[in-house]
Length: 189
Image (cartoon, rainbow, N blue to C red; front, side):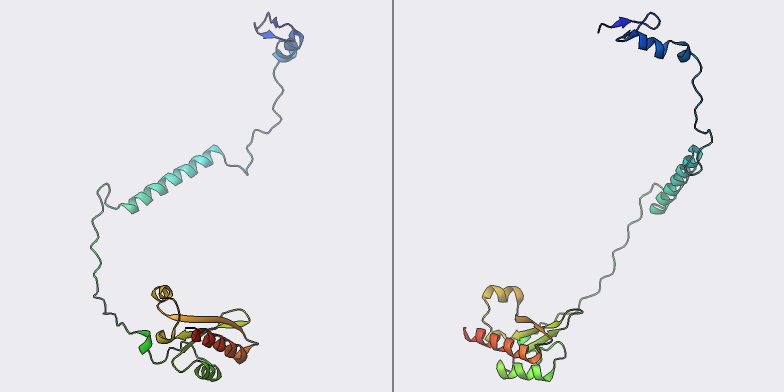
């Protein structure tokens, strides 16, 4: 379709008839229809005045926070003196082999007897009772002279601890089986 030039506004348009109806008819020249929206703002929305109040309040808060950070104005804050140091107590380095009883938690006497009979009196026991679950962690602390752990393991962990999760239903039988397995492993030295 060939474009035509409007004689009134000078625009080139594809459909001159439609252009004339839209932009140059009596209806287009008359006052537009009134806006059906109310002039009063919706009370649920913030007005420009409300936003100006909030902005002013935020500026005041920011100023007061900046004053709290630097109460001396533009001057830098005075340096704080270093905290007094207290001399440290010398650490007592007691090898684990010299600790007379390495048991850490109360252990049923039957379990202690089982370990003593199967492994020996110098093996320690630690029992961890988790907050939830149906069992406990039974740990056997192997003396350094009887350990067959690798040198790297000993350097990293410092001790040889064998741990097994035992169900409460297994009880002393589970402890006995674990002690026998540890004894079998230590004989392979």
